[in-house]
Length: 228
Image (cartoon, rainbow, N blue to C red; front, side, top):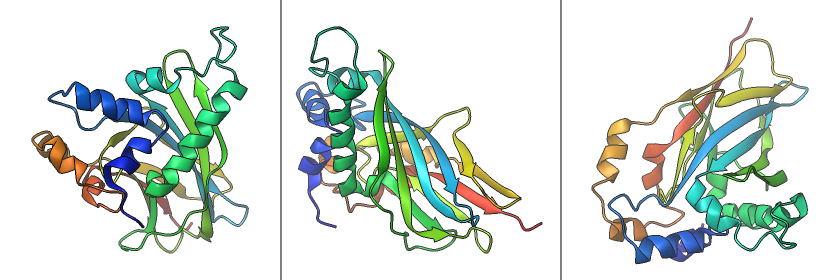
């Protein structure tokens, strides 16, 4: 994957340019990360009981949301229609491609990530306070989780965006799993997050999409299917 560095991160998620510019012109002690997202996900099973995709719903913080929706109310009626939000949804998923959609799938205990297809069924929802990006990532080759657990990590390699799973119903199973299949979330190491607070923006500016730094903040969905 090409290393695009800071420019790539600034293009991320459409209004990120404004977010990065704000952070650069008005530094804060907690300037990094710049965007926060609450994650809710569904593990989608096909009729043959294999995992065929991951359906995400990412809700972004109010600061990012306020900038992302600027200028999108084209008719000035105070209501952001689906048509007005459609370009935002598209630029979001297009920008995420550079970062592998912040979603990394592998068999438990293995190092190699399994390839994903581009997002489908994507749209943005705005409740007048925060934005939620909905999209589904099909898995290139469906995975049978019965022989071995499947791990799905959600994180930004450069830690520009901080992801955290929702406290309630963070992950669900959808479709037709085999009996005995469950999905749960493993929490990241809290000491890593504390250590990151002591690092400078200069350190983070050197991290590109191919950095592995953000992996220590990953929250992992683990799919287990126990044979009955």
